[in-house]
Amino acid sequence: MSPVLFLLLAVAGVGAGLVGYLVGLASLVSYPALLAAGLPPVAANVTNTLALVGAGVGTAARAGRQFLARGPRTTLVEVSVALVGGLLGAWLLLATGESSFSSVVPWLVLAAAVLLAVSPRLQHAGALGPVPRPVYYGALLLTCVYGGYFGAGAGVIYLAIAVLLSGMDFTSSVLVKSILLAVSNLSAAVLFMLTAPVHWGAALALGIGCVVGGWLGPAVQRLIPERVLRITVSAAGVGLAGWLWVHR
Figure 1 (tube, rainbow, N blue to C red):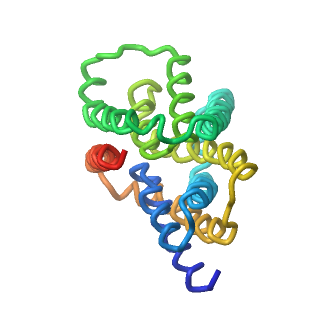
Figure 2: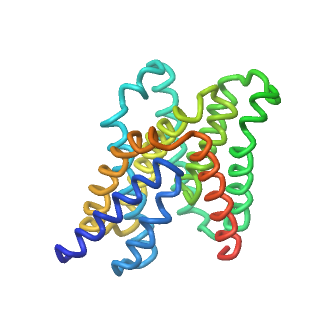
């Protein structure tokens, strides 16, 4: 890999890490960058999954204490669920193929985007009431399975689940989302690395950029009003759902 291409992928990684932290759509930046670099789709998908772990590493480096401050038991359970979910999702993808789920994905992303947009009203009205913790963990597991299986819009889906079911506020949900989905990506990437080609140079370049983008994310988030960010994430989710529907 030429130094210029390495640098361009690193810059793309910064954008992916930042976009992934703020709106949960990192792959919209990173995956096309890998394709443009000349990687075939399978190698690009596997390399992308591995590189995006860097975004969570960067976020943890800046705000890891805030993540851990929620309690060791909560942290251990969430990380364990994310690990298992990512591994199951990767296995499901290898066993069934991506096409078997393609018609459902747009509706999942669309539903999550709409729920995220209306979540303040639902919370204010007490529409859900107290939600048992296992319900949240079950939803987290399914989200991480989806993340390991397909991944597009997983951040939007998790934000909707976290805001509605976990009791976390939106700001905390954005932070936790970045780290847990990185854990899910890591477990999926381990399985992918054993069964599919990884372009290690591209993964390193993109991953370095993702670390920087993930590290910048919490600081940039503080500059953006929560309502604006929530609406932006919801709108991006609707747009992604439409794109996935057209290209299903």
